[in-house]
Length: 243
Image (cartoon, rainbow, N blue to C red; front, side, top):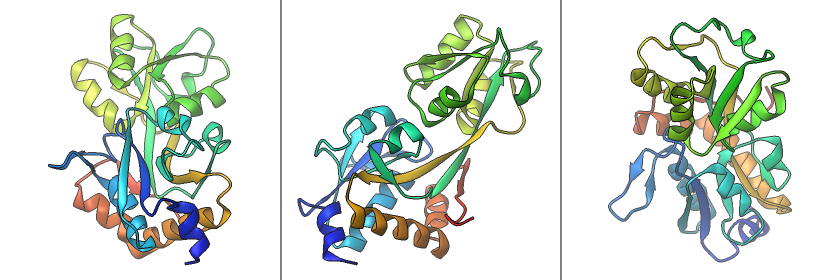
């Protein structure tokens, strides 16, 4: 590791790690001291340990709020989904984990497969500024996309206003379906949300260091061990960057 990488990633002598609290797969609780607990905080702590500096968690209610602080001396690394809009202001590693994103439809829906969703007249509701919401923003061509603040807000609108489709992470939809008997989660996925580690631009040496750390963490089994440690269902280790 170069001193330049450490200086770029932890200029204050502490690695300030931006953590998105809304991803319940990556943040599964709080410590007695109030710090976030889960796969993402542990990855950040391991990066700090490898740099030889302490970690400090900077928490956000949503990934969009975290990304808004890029380049503002609020955090040094941010652990969120890597999407093109965010890549404009952050440099991302390859993904360290992936999460399936798919659709849920209400009881009696004529929609039975993912390829039937992007049609004229179909309304899709999702959590605003989520990684999968950004994917839908970029890729839906015909359906109307409705973005609502928060996971609960998206489900409530889907249920209360009888929206055609709810888009979300499969593990979250498995919880939502319990609140709507007769609803269906469509088979397959429209995207795999790739959770990565980003740093502020330019930080070329820092970005290179993070990229190498993530690849080593996947290859060594560290990421898999953290998923097992926190007993998270619905996460898988992302493939190597060169695949």
